[in-house]
Figure 1: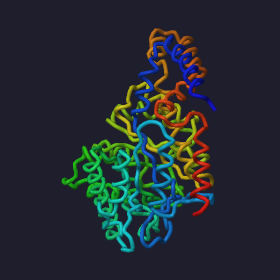
Figure 2: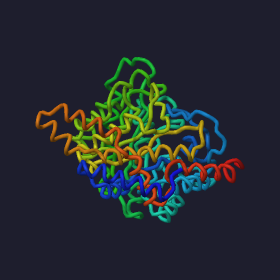
Figure 3: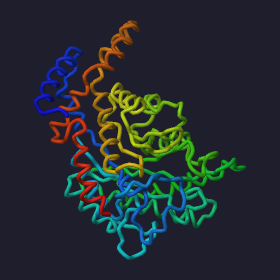
Figure 4: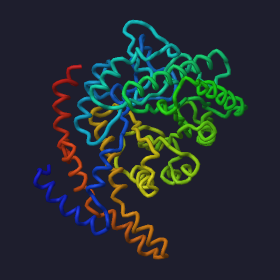
Length: 423
């Protein structure tokens, strides 16, 4: 693993190489460290939640596979694991909570009745770590979601339950923002859809519009504090043929209501490029929420790695200089490997993609293209693949006082031996 002396020497050479292309690596490192990445709490416990009683996941196409030992079993264990992950991650972090991680003790509190006091411990933890909180209503893993329909359900009483849950969640998000002094991004995703071809595709979508209109009509919510996002999907477990909240639905609805559109890397056909969608959608959407995930043949939520889809996504953000118009969050859940390692691998890969995007000689590449020198454009694009970005990454880690290379594995191994193996 690289020593401090080796990191410094390699970085000097890298800084010079990038300087020849007009790139200030000092400014890039500072920018890459400042962009918040929102960690998802549900990797720690395999998307089980903390509700009382715990009946397990009953619907919604959410499934973490694998049985690696050491899963967090309660909020304290989740926060302890997150503390270990945070120590190994460079840059500004946030935490993304789902509503069914409310901690109500022995009291049964249904989703339509959750309130800020049920997240007091999470809020205190975030405040002490100086990180912001994001939030998600949990429109799945509940008896009233077992049919596969929630906000678009044909039964008005079921829809009302989920509408009230959405309203309660927005109040919680606003509370987080006020207490932590940073806006809370609240993302709405529903599992609604059909396994096989429905005769009526119209009515569920009309009901979904009605339900969301009711949720977002609450004028006691300050939208600068509670930043609402909506997330579409191509298909899911139990909704293979028809998804009510499709990409077209949410893109149009977000634009109509002034909401943030969420793009999840796993929610499209495998041949679609999410990176290509960015410049099209952001002509009309002021802001977007990005969920980094890794689909393998389907929306399987594998741990993020530095693959082409992730790199290309943030390269596109960099080339459009749209950093102040995006929110970045993780969304994967793997129960087959050490869960803290999953956090570190996925979060580091996401920030590495951010760094790589910032190191792109966009100005020179665009100039070559504008001048009709297509050969030069292509040559420069190829050159970026072999530039020493890894040396800049190691320097970034050193400045953030976190391990470079794979040195962080030792801390994960220690925590597994001392803590996880005893659960």
